[in-house]
Length: 54
Image 1 (cartoon, rainbow, N blue to C red):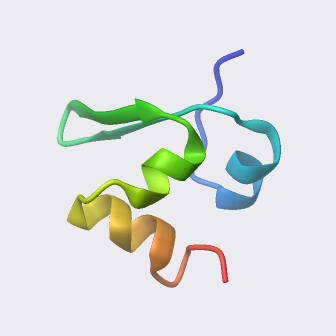
Image 2: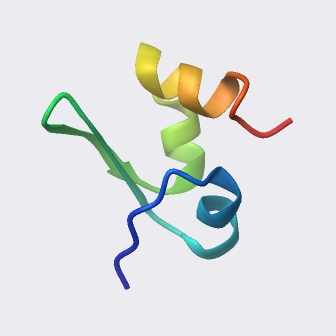
Image 3: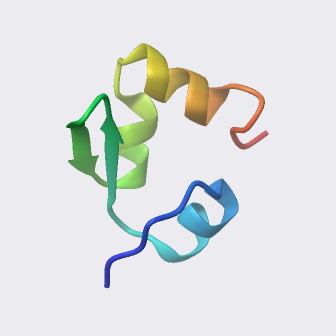
């Protein structure tokens, strides 16, 4: 299954792998835990900033 979403609740609920695209590139394609730990400013802000999970 392939899903495009910006909704983190949906992402955590139904996805076991995540591909993050930014600036016309795939930054990472891995499990959600690996994506959360990936050291990239955009990813860190998205997953650990105001939109991220508490």
